[in-house]
Image (tube, rainbow, N blue to C red; front, top):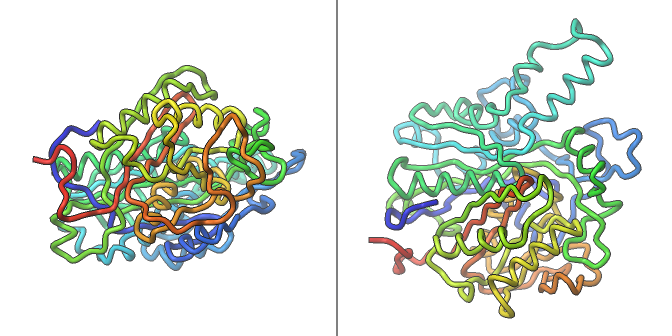
Length: 415
């Protein structure tokens, strides 16, 4: 948890890769349009599964963004993290050479690491035996490559690099790490976010738990029947207010604070009181009250238990004055370690462009959830403060608070 005081931390660049769009302009337009990226999964063999839909990234050319690293040295998830990082720098108007003289941090959250590459290794071993395995495939498999490959591609040397494996909350964990490092002055900038590729292991795991939707993900809907696995990446450039102002950067949002906790209540089932505590920790760390929040970007997986538990936890903290509560997983699927990073980018876009993305595929709100999920169509709104939720297996909860940047207003706790 960040200590009070320190520099203000601004989000000045973003890179998004998802089933509804590659790059911030396309991602923004898709969020505004309530577009869904659902389709049949073709990345792995889905034989034997009754339901085979998901959110696969299809219009992605890694060679457009990856210039130095041979593509055959990168697994699918690493290609996502590297490409999204370069997108974030270009979006921020920062060159790689400018970063090389600065201290930095690269943190990438993930659930599966290079699970897609492990799928391929297993399939090759089963069908062709060890002799047919490509050693390069094994070298692509370590999860650490998701962050390490970013530093290598951008030729960053004075940089701390780590991959965060806190499952579906990992993107927010990475964002919190970058916030702390920039705020304290430990680093000059942070490239943070999350990345994951579709893999058979995770799809099969959710399927065996009975959590995969038959057709579409319908968060908070009375007829919801599960999640749809997805893939992609969201990477963000964080820098201090002084740095951003000195170079005349455009600012998406200010990071006000975050909250983390881990209740270890159950391997896969969220715990209401623990989620509520995490929401409160984030608000306290950001120095704001529930009434200051204009929008909640929920974890919102579309499963019976998650949506009900999350909605009840929000009621604990916000009472009857809850702001709109949306789930972009209805559009991009559950992108695992990238989920809350893409959620943070969506939150920043909502602040910068003045709109609330919808919860797609919605029919009738579950009375037990009792939230305004902004069904099916985006609305124009003056969004000043957004709470971005991430609730992972094992009780790993992470919540980040983003706000509109006002240069004349100092953050809570500033000296």
